Amino acid sequence: MKKKATLTSPAIFILVAFAVVPLFIMFYYSFLSDGDTAKLTLNNYINFFSKGLYLKLTAKTIKLSLIVTIICILIGYPMAYIMAKVIEKGKNILLLLIIIPFWTSELVRVYSWVNLLRDGGILEVFLKKLHIISSSSLGLLFTQNAVIIGLVHVFFPYMVITIYMSLEKIDTSIIEASKSLGASPLKTFINVILPLSKNGIITGCILVFVPCLGSFVEPRILGGVNGSVIGTIIEDQFFEIYGWNFGAAIAFILLALVLISMKVLSYFNQEV
Image (cartoon, rainbow, N blue to C red; front, side, top):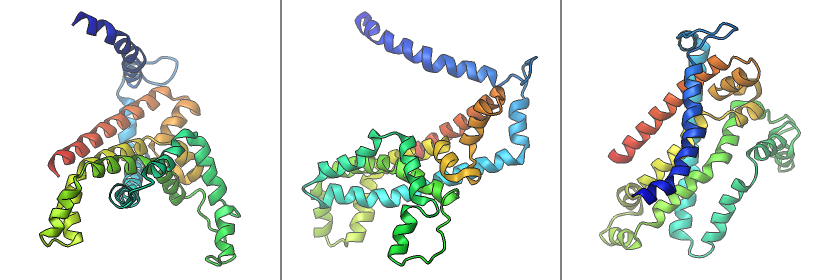
């Protein structure tokens, strides 16, 4: 027992020193007023909930995260199913292609979308060559749609991998038994495959929805002034306005939102 404690103590020390302690320090600062004479106060939290702007941005952030999560499911589930149950060869290559984006910087991936979505960019030129659009510009960059595209590109691999791992564990004989009993492919999917893969879906939702709540790079670069979310407000408070105390309060409100989201998704993981 002592040996185990000795082996785990460095990891525990690092976790406490670089995660728990800074968290408590920021929590303390969230109750301090801004200015030269900082005092303990609840004004930071009161200001957040009393101003309609922050509440609207919170609702906008939740809505954006939900849209991205739903799109990731719609794209990720069919892709994962094809990899797990349809394709027999080349699975490793497909998985590698999905994982490759993780090897590049998130900032680089976002700026690549800027070149694609901007007026006169690669996507617009390509669509005009195919005569899909007229001479008018796409007008995608610095819009909410551009932010959604960027976030889906960043997070959908998490959805694909988690669902794929869940589908891969399903015994093919169970699916064959359902078909032999006269169930249609749709009934087999709804009654057999979907319930057995729910853990992968819920895990993927957690890995997509929760990071989306705190994202600020994609909304800032791809959304411009239309991409303001809670994450960008926190960034502004810390690096532009230097309202660190108010920024810390917003960060803890976001943390509470994240914990509630994880609790709700975990509940569905048990009940569905």
